[in-house]
Image 1 (cartoon, rainbow, N blue to C red):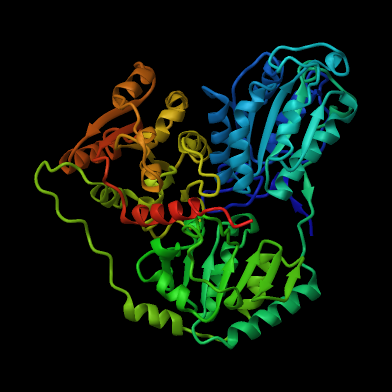
Image 2 (cartoon, rainbow, N blue to C red; image 1 turned 60 degrees about the horizontal axis):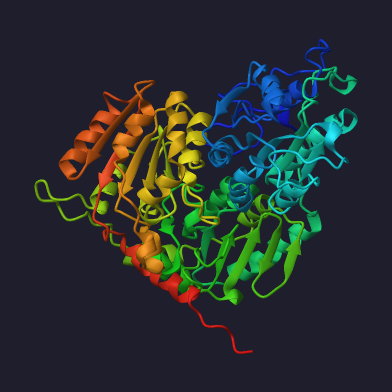
Length: 606
């Protein structure tokens, strides 16, 4: 059965369905109405397509090759242009937007813009995010000539940018004639949605405003045929997995980050309910599964797992991993105590049981639902977990005016979380501290917590906060950002203020790249300290709603949080938190030493 992308319900914060109109609306595009010639242009077609698939905000940096295109995009009543301070942040913002809405878009200019945004596109590719990167390209008359253009490396070959994007996008469209434009744009956008990866669309600067017969009618909504499991393969995979797991004494389940792209979170919970196994999440899957479920153990992250979680997972005689990514970071320097012969690995379209057999063309959602009907109830591993579980303690009570500790900070951030908040964690010690936050009941379990673990680009969270908050203005985004990361991308705090966002940014000022210190220390990990609150005040410049403060102790933190959540609840709030340079989570200390050991392995003998 086809899925009509243009008319399904909106992607609400608790729903990761792709390509949906915002705020619970239904797309108004019902047919293929004729358009006036002034609207039957490439630029307006692209704008209408973006709105159809759920993009109501595009993040852009203007340049002379994309100015006409931007004119036609902003002429679409349902599409808002969010002008960013640089291309990298525009890409990060589209990344954050896609994590909530299911698809995001950015618009930059040729080569200088494209090669600036490409780092953010690579991050979205690594995280399986549908992101439409639109480039304003050269005039059609310059292709195939020996002319040298500005914004290039000084060669008449204009393909450098395209070649760079080929490795970080799943489809590339260079639109330099109107005859193929309609097909190329539609193919690019539909491929983006189907593959859940970024795409590249370059549009020559002299084409957006020209009418063409292919754009003379309102575009018919996409009808994307969903992927289907091979029925025989699915049956065989379910039978083999059920036989494997029903023989086990104390099996467990672990959810991975690819649950998102597989849209299998509900099916995973259905399986957990049916079989009684305890379950954990890999760190980059936090937020994809409910944490108030009675059988939820926490985060499985090897030596830095939630207390008592790794012991149960690694001692199990069978484990089902749904959508895992095992890299050096998620495996804590390749130190997980897992055995392949005990594992069932379920990827979005493939199942591998122990050392074999493997089943292709089997969708994760279908497999988990089928398996739920075939497994015997087995709560042994959960009972073992329950017997050894000891509730978390609280940080040592601070003395009056004692310098603020990081664990005290996150105790108070925990108390801020509700169904109206979302958390974004920057690369660094915030990974580990935010991982310990318990996401509250009653607000769904998808799209409440985001961080970029696979790519780990410092500074990502500033742009991602901008994009995420733009996608769900009804939620208040709480961002935890280190000072080193903040220095990379601070400029787009300006865009947050301009866009009237009300996020709360905790800037953790500990004087350097703490995560790098714990992997390998050196003088290069110390950064110049800034007066961050004064910097944000300067960016604010009295225009818009922004409130800043600096805290050094628990008393000041409590007062700042109260102000941010009450009197300044409609403002962008920036709270600079001064902590000791060596105040890190115990998890970062352990993780850093193991990653250091993995990085410093000597070459294998030749």
